[in-house]
Image (cartoon, rainbow, N blue to C red):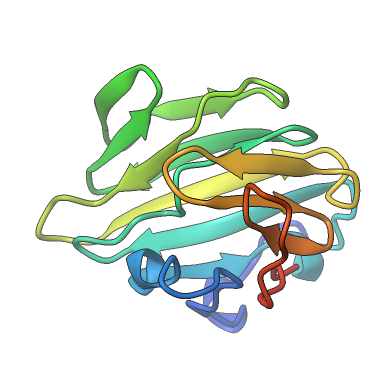
Length: 155
């Protein structure tokens, strides 16, 4: 069925980030949309950020394009160019391979909601977190010196 019932899709705030990097996303709740829709060539998540929450650690992808569509509430896009307020109807695009670390931060006193869409091979993806001692690849997370964290990326 083309129309998804969001209430029927489990919501989680799980993260694969190792401590202490996991704390910033405790208020990020998401539903994976692609699996129940039968989509296999792209990823999509319906995300709600509680006040104060980050969408992720600031990062960029080598092998995946990202598109974010703001649905409700307000957030601040923080990237290598600075800070940009975003709200309902705004669309953000992050091409694969563009080393522009980015994330959203909900600085308001109400939740914000967006859909994040990704395309590209997750198995061949890698990237960096410019503000913290962490990089990622298909196998999980590592420090910038190459030593591995125990945590694994969540599919």
